[in-house]
Image (cartoon, rainbow, N blue to C red):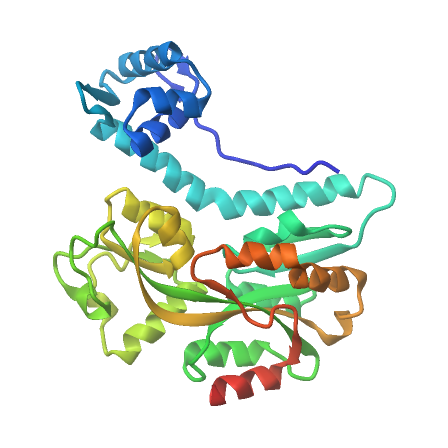
Length: 357
């Protein structure tokens, strides 16, 4: 069955009703990457002449050129061209998880219209690069993947709104508000843990690290601009733990109140030059060409009812994450590693390992 994928689209319309096709974004991306209009046009699948026409039409539309042609030095984006390109990147990064969740709902509804409906696995999970791989490899079952905070995912499992909850926790921390909250929601007698992956979190830095950020202590410098994750996210909780461990006050960090809702949105914010540093996973930093300073590792885990382990959808999920193709895809993610992926353990075993690991 074909799957629906929802992507954000741009529409530019002026007061007179003139509208431009946003095909130009591909051209801007190519120019930013290669610095050559000929290569950018080829990447966008258009002729060099058509590329010139697009640039002229957009320059006329905005009243400002988007690309500067430099004799002997190729092409480069003007400040407006840069802002448009990075605005698109930020919108895609910010809306991606919500659109993926909506697409999952629509695909499930379509699947239910056909005969021979496959088993449905309802998963509520914190967004991450490895979790985002799951729909691509799901076969012989329908994956209804909804992104939310770790606390919301665990609450959904406990009220029966999902079959599997995805959440993450530091590999070393066993105390504090985050772990206490997890302990309240994890039920050793009825829940079991499906091991998934381990990932690295740290500081995402502007390319070349021009501010010379060497650790968390540098975040309180007046010349360093920070971009944060939203308060409900597990990544924000991990950052709060690290700041407490080194005795740093969040109030002293410039930009700590500014929030984005995904790792990639934080990385795009920095790549656009709007901040010098953020906190998140290495995969997001590499995606946007940023430097990365590792600070902590964490387990990403899947939680389900022990009684669900025999359900066809859960059985197929386990088969999928244990498969060589899926595990190879995880290995290709920077900062991600397989952590006995697909093994099942009890809640008590997990906390015992954390205390003694």
